[in-house]
Image 1 (cartoon, rainbow, N blue to C red):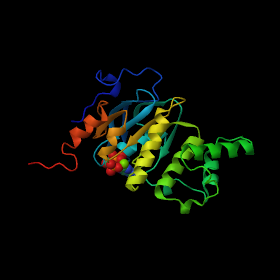
Image 2: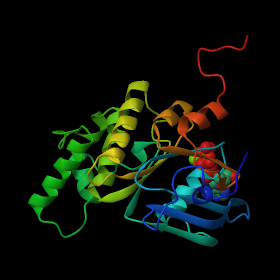
Image 3: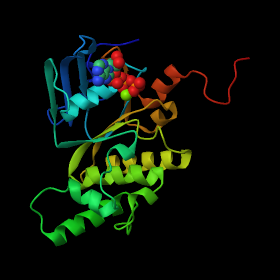
Image 4: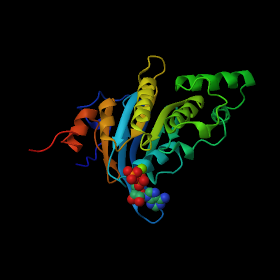
Length: 245
Ligand SMILES: Nc1ncnc2c1ncn2[C@@H]1O[C@H](COP(=O)(O)OP(=O)(O)OP(=O)(O)O)[C@@H](O)[C@H]1O
Ligand SMILES: [Mg+2]
């Protein structure tokens, strides 16, 4: 069912968000130039830091929503507010890694006006946070797909983003790299000091088991937050290995 009420209006899950919500999307409408509606009275509110997942059929408006949140598109009506800087992580890291080496790419995303030593320090810290310590000079084309995706996440960290918007970040990865990237985002979103907020779009239903809450998007609207495992069961009543008999 495509529910049309906002996450925050749902009393069942989780406790009502305060004004410190990392992301609020309120009654947003967006149409493409051809007049085709993509979002219709879309509401979403992240209850707090954590890993929040969004699922929905092809064309339901998930990627459009992320583009609106990051400011690449503007809503026709409604309001979007974020607390802290948002950063987008694409499905294909090759679409966002621009410079030849890990360090040079990360330098690009650093805030301006930092001294050279501080820039080096921040690059090293970002690489360390994503498990790529010491790979500063490594040419990007020699990284695996999973390492490239973790480097893209390091870029978001180096830019001091507090809200990560991840559009099917594991879709192109092998199972081991999928797990590594999910583990990494989980760790960043559940650390005690300055935990991040992540809005993670997925078609991989097994990933729902690892989130703090999940919601379903259909026809440009988002339903209420639910427990990830519960939404997975709703969408995939027969897990792999079980057959109807
Ligand atoms: N640049 C564009 N111009 C016109 N229509 C577009 C454009 N990009 C997307 N759309 C339309 O907007 C709607 C929502 O697309 P969107 O890419 O947001 O869906 P999605 O939920 O991310 O789908 P998927 O799961 O396949 O990635 C679709 O009808 C799509 O055809
Ligand atoms: Mg999409």
